Amino acid sequence: QVQLVESGGGLVQAGGSLRLSCAASGRTFSGYVMAWFRQASGKEREFVSAITWSVGSTYYADSVKGRFTISRDNAKNTVYLQMNSLKPEDTAVYYCAADRTAIIHTTTKNYNHWGQGTQVTVSS
Image (cartoon, rainbow, N blue to C red; front, side, top):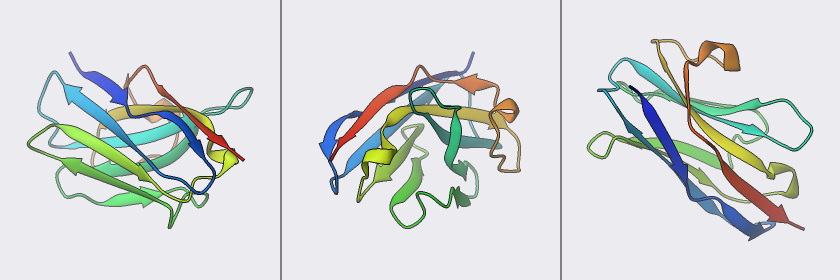
């Protein structure tokens, strides 16, 4: 059974940085896409970034491009989201997701496995 556990969220001032971690377990993730989504209060969950586990190809939402970096550590079975130059509009619960596919999807319906989420709050 796939388990995803996020950590690293917190409160930070605008312009600051945070690094989120997603510890994955339950199987080998070769052939999977790992993604980060976020959901602000009262809004729908939206795609942030994704990475293919095997090759390391990445994709970003326009709103975070140039500020966020996704990476993975195969030995630790962990995916990271380095978030720099944070803005108040980045405030949300951030979720890690996984899908067994070679194609990066940006919609929630394509991901079968989800973590519990970690809160990121950016103050102005």
